[in-house]
Length: 308
Image 1 (cartoon, rainbow, N blue to C red):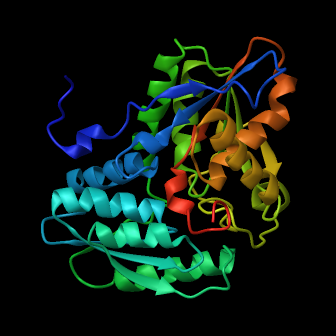
Image 2: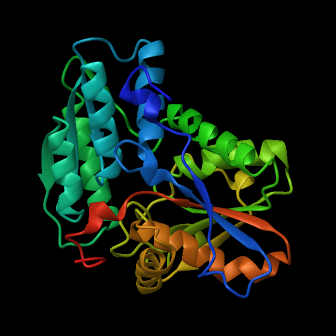
């Protein structure tokens, strides 16, 4: 039996699954990395562990310190989870625009929440308010501000995700399709895939309602975790080939289709990932292997319009 020394060792090594029904009729393959197999049900566990351990090694985070971050929920839950194991206090700034399940999960892991009211939609202005409040809280002594939007420790956590994908597909990855918030995941994976094969195509995905990278337009939407209305500092133009825009309603419908037809229960950003892969699938030609990410579990969205 596989026994881990503690729960942090349970992060990673998630399954890679071939999609079958939603890709029927295509001559190429779409594989989806089921990141909801991580302990909190999200790929953000990789980021949280890499950031906390990176900060410890650099002497930026010491015993008795408090970890502070602005978050939509998944990153906050992951940080609270890692800090609960390591013994740090956590203060998280979030909003009621994000699901109730996410806020309850952060509290369950012992985080102190500061909740900023909203009109129910994710906007760039709201995200900036959250970040400003987190910076204010981080002015207290013995505090470590995560600042995931600029924290390069996160890339190391997602580099491992890229290594896993290459191993699972025996080194043959023709394309990666992934949405982005902080861009840590898609950039961290792209670093590994492009280093292995510079011809690997990387498509980043953003909401039609908030096409900040492709059109310079920030707008409100309900796809949690992506399309924050800003261009994240971690996003590198040399590591992606194009931008795919997905409508919010299409992303949600694909998420519902995934659970009904493929048994893959995930959130709307995962729906956006798969919808984007389907939109560009035929341009790759026959026999290609395209990879995308199931970012988190549908259990985080039971109270939202996605599944509620």
